[in-house]
Image 1 (tube, rainbow, N blue to C red):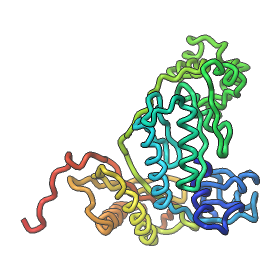
Image 2 (image 1 turned 90 degrees about the horizontal axis):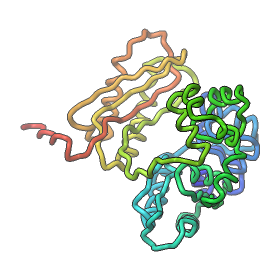
Image 3 (image 1 turned 30 degrees about the vertical axis):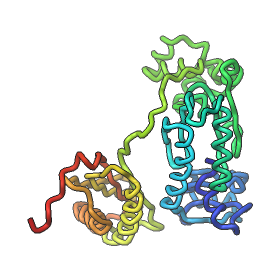
Length: 345
């Protein structure tokens, strides 16, 4: 999806259309969740501190994120995918891999499937999506970013080398600053340069990831599209405008627990563990958790458990906190969970 959170906001509020929109809480501690393409023209990017985004684009309109609404839209997009294939591997609310080797609609090419899906998203949801079509996940991911926004790019098997070899090595997944610097010291700037390195040399320098680099430089990715990947955890968190003592975190914990409860209602599996996360003013992260045989039965119970976990934090009255989060984990199927006994058994 193109600038997903910001695009949903612009779709739902006509006054935001065509304007630089930044999805973020405005404040010194906030970070950008998403930026419209009008805001990106000023250099605003996701994960950027909100104060820097505001400096780059003083005319930007800040909109607080509404993840419950974004999940509803994401579910609608997923339903469109399901018309074409059951082999869907979500990466996030706004991105997924689809294996359309065999598709439900009988379309003869993956390109036609991608074109059809993009048109259905446009017509039914009034949003745009970009798609990449290729023989594996790695190449399809690269292709999906190639003609954003609202684009479709196809890498035919015979065109893989022409597309891949001139790319900077930084476009390969897993090649960050450290790996990029190590490759640069060897004079490797492009994927073509990387392909010239022997497998054993890459293994010596990068361990098992060296094998992955060797394959990627040849356009090889053997990973399959894995549908219905089980949820491991759900969490929400927020940063305070100013550092606060532990006693002043209750309002935030209650608000986050409500958001978490709404998000968890969309999961078919249930979570047995409630987690409270706190980050001190010195950036030390603390977590406290509680696991029970039965999941929280209501938002009120989830909130009470999160607040009770706060009581297990004892760093003294002078300690200040900059962030708090509430999460759920240890998900399992409902039939695996023991029945909750009657209250007055």
